[in-house]
Every structure is written in structure tokens, then in C-alpha cells.
Image (cartoon, rainbow, N blue to C red; front, top):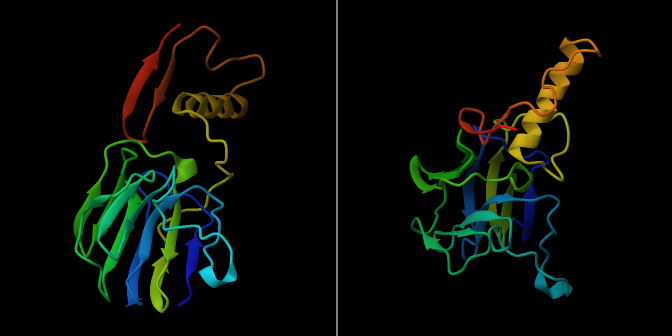
Length: 201
């Protein structure tokens, strides 16, 4: 019930999501749900004289929906897009990445955001901001799987593919064999389900 921010320690990958259930709207229902890089500055009461971190979606590399006006904000672009009515107690908000890598959000079973563009994993940490005193929510991160390593400094899709091929090479082949010889074709994809491009030497 305090003004602040909650951020999960693992990012989403395509196909994953988290769920927020609104238990109390507080003064103005200023609750933000979305994705952001980590770590994110903690929002603090204004009377403490510290800079407020703002609602998720208000800054570059963030995507978020706000419950007070039902608006969606992408990379800090204002005034945002109206996607739903004001949120209410018992509303269930789901935020995730589609298999194609785009952000989606669902409110009470109805899709309110369906973005087509690929969202970087390094900017996909589940984030919930509270700017209304008395606001309360239940957060469910069980659909976010553990990750083997940090995604800080995330590489491009083609670099990730080549990295995966190198791992396979080290584990499945002898040191004298090469899975992908230099100057040969290398494929890259933007999602786990879709072949995006092929680069040939």
C-alpha cells in the first residue's frame, strides 16, 4: 500500500507473461503495469525530497499501461493511447510477450494491447508501479521461467544464434570440427517460432 515500484528479477522471453490482480485502487488508481530494463530506480514519496522514478512506460525502453486513465505508453511517448476504461478492484491484467516477440496486454480476458514490433529481452523485466497511496495488487510471476544468465548487454538475434551454434559445436563436436565454418551461411531469427532472415557470405 505504499508508493513505489516492484520489479521481477528475471525478464520475459517470447511466450511468457505475468499477471496483476487489482486488490485496491488507492486514491486515483495510479497503478502501472508493464516492462522495463533492470534495475529501475525506486519510486519514493515526494515529501522525502528524492526524484520520483515515474510510472512504467514513461521513459525510454519501457512499455506500460496505467490504470488511472486506461492509457498505454510506449517508450515515454505522451499522451499515450487510450486502450481501456479506468481499472477497478478485481481487474486482472496480464502482460506478456507473444511468440513473435511483441508486447501484449489483456484486461479481464480482453486484449487491450497487441504490439507487432519485437521487444528486446533486456527491456522486458516485469514492472509494476504504484503512485496512489493505498493501492494494492497481487502479482503472479509463476509463468516467468528461470534464466541461465543475465541479459544485460543483450546481443542481436543473429549473434544469439551464432552463440547457440558455438555451444552446440563445443558440446557435440571435437575441437577439430566446425559446425559453422567461417564465410559460410548463418541463419538468424527474431523469435523462437519464426525464421526472420538468412545472411550469406
